Amino acid sequence: MAALLQLFASFALIGLGAYGGGLVTIPLIQHEVVTVRGWLAAEEMSQLLAVAQMTPGPIAINGATFVGYRVAGIPGAVVSTVAVLLPSLLILAVLVRIVDRIAGSRHVGRVRGGLQIGVLSLILFAVWSYGAVVVTGWWEFALAAGAFGVLVATEGKVQPALVILGCGVLGVALF
Image (tube, rainbow, N blue to C red; front, side, top):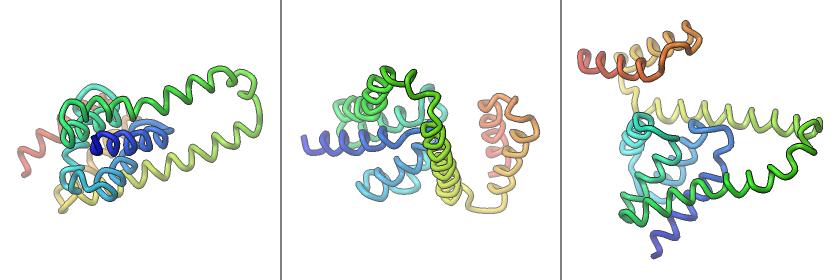
C-alpha cells in the first residue's frame, strides 16, 4: 500500500509539472524516478525512454505505466497512470470554465511566454541528461548529430519513426 501511495504522489507531481508536452516530462520523470525514489538506475531510465517513445501514446503515460508496473505490478501501473493524468484533467476542468474570459489578457500572454521559456529549459535539460547516458562515444554522437541534421534540414517533415528506425538500422551496422 505504501508503494502505491508513493507512486501516486510521484506521478501526480510529474503530471502537475508536465505543462508543455512529453519531452518536458523526461527530466521530471528522471528526477522523481531515478534521483528521488531510486526506482530505476540512469541506464534503465534511458531504456524506459526508448520503449516509451517507440510505443503508442504520450511518454509520461507510457513511463508511468512502466514504472508503476515495475514497482507494484498491475495495481502500480493503474495507480501511476491515473496519477499522471489526474492533474491535467482537474486543471482542464477548472480552466475550461474561465479560459474565454481571460484568453485575451496581456497578463495571461506574459505568463504563457514565461511558461514556454521554462518548458524550453526542461526540453534542453532532457536532451542533455538523456544524451549523457546514450551518447558514450564519437559514433553515437555522429549518429545523433546526423539524425538531428536530417530533421532540421527537412524542417521536421520526415516521419520521426523513420528517423528512429534508420538510426536503429545504422546502430546494427555500426555497433
